[in-house]
Amino acid sequence: MIRLQSEPIRVEELLDAVAAPAAGAVALFLGTVRSHNRGRRVLHLEYQAYSEMAQSEMERLVAEVRTRFELSAVALVHRTGRLELGEVSVAVAVAAPHRAPAFDACRFVIEELKRSVPIWKRETFDGGEVWIEGAGESPVTEPQA
Image: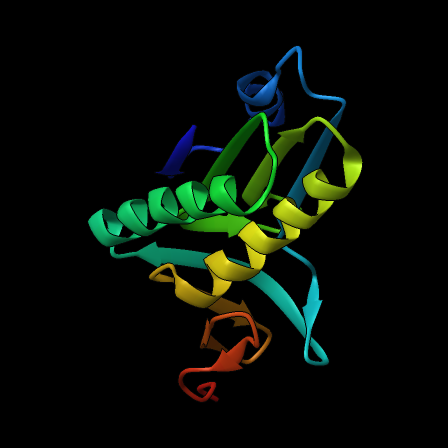
């Protein structure tokens, strides 16, 4: 399971996708919309993606993580569109025979996704909005008053 979608992410679906008899560990990462960022109150987020390239990069990323770590299964889903506070924006589920590779692979996937997949986040907050990019979350444009 590797996809972009505008619908809410169903955690049970990811867990079902990585269920495997050989898995002794499942690591799950959920990125959620938080209420505050950089000292300002967040109202909502919007994610946009270059869909074809993002899907291709997500598939490449999952193939790479499978060669780097001993894994049973990987699932990766990212939302697009408007998301409200508390909603899940990205989910990574990794199953492995042991916990260490499950944790390590899960972290690798989310960090690499933020670094290399063409998905952009616009944060709307009290007083303005700003586009935020990548793992460091540096603003792409300045907020408007």
